[in-house]
Every structure is written in structure tokens, then in C-alpha cells.
Amino acid sequence: MIDETLNGYRQSIDNIDAALVCMLAERFKVTQAVGRYKATAGLPPADPGREEAQITRLRGLARDANLDPDFSEKFLRFIIDEVIRHHERVRDGG
Image (cartoon, rainbow, N blue to C red; front, side, top):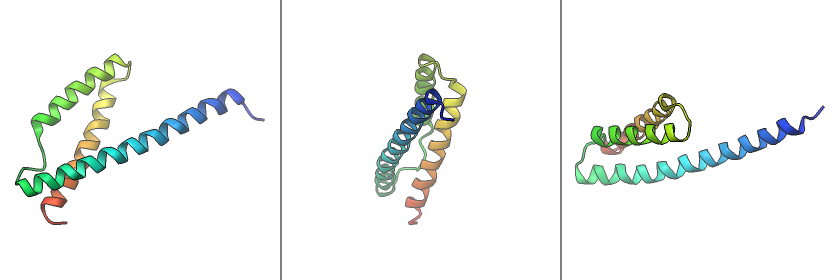
């Protein structure tokens, strides 16, 4: 038995997931360029002030969008931590 309502919701979720993956891929392309720039400029891989400003900004956006700010912060911190690992690898020649 096919539930067309549920199927429609799932199709929308699949489309959103695909868009999220593409957006994350694009974001990481840019952050990889930032990592290479930081390495050649002798800048540290992490920028705690920038990270905190971004988290504060995105928590506000989450609240405005009726999304749990704590969830959005955890999600962003996960991404930031991965970016920093990439920047450290570039800095260290890996």
C-alpha cells in the first residue's frame, strides 16, 4: 500500500538532503581554499573569535527560523571542528 502523502513528504526530504550535501561540499571547497591561504600566510588553523561570532549569528538565525539553537550550534561546531582538522593537515603538509 502506497501512502501518497508520506511519499510526498519523503520526496521533499530527499530533495532537501541532496541540497544540504551539495551546500556542504561547496562550503568545504571554500574552507579548503581558506586553509591553503592560512598555511601560506602563516596564520593559525583556528580563529576562535570568528567561530564564536558565527555561532552567535547562526543561533540567532536558528531562533528566527524556529530551529533549536542548541541543535544548530552542535551542527555548526561539528563542521567547524572538521574544517580546523583540514586546516591543520594543510599546515602540516598533509
